[in-house]
Length: 175
Image (tube, helix red, strand yellow):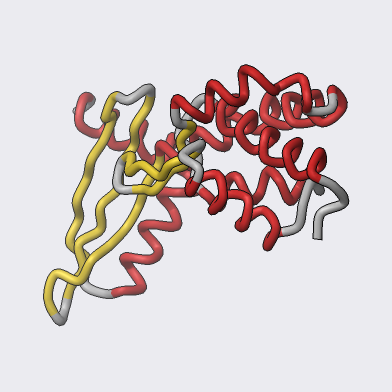
């Protein structure tokens, strides 16, 4: 399955480096996107690596703002610090450049949330939330009459949250 143990170790160290470099909570899906977009390993190998890193206590799942995120453990940080030089400089540069260009969209994915729950048989509660630097900017709950409205609100919020937030703020502050 693996070309050799050096490649296996380098790939796992690279995952630890990615999680440390992102500096914000990162979901399994976001990590998967980063790794696949850079063609480091295939999906199934990546999921196996993540499981192995969790089982060896180098990574752990934590819940942040009701989302599961991967986090480096102290043991993982120590291993990365000791063996980072085993990651090829070209892969390090590729990842660092990628993260630099994508960090804002990663932050937005994490800090803007929208979900809905049935309130009763005829309505749904939509919860729209914006968080910036661990500060809650907006937490709005709205009751709507259909699932379609709930889905539409969530979609609009995720795609245009800054504009909607500004409109809400202006409507509340200005007459």
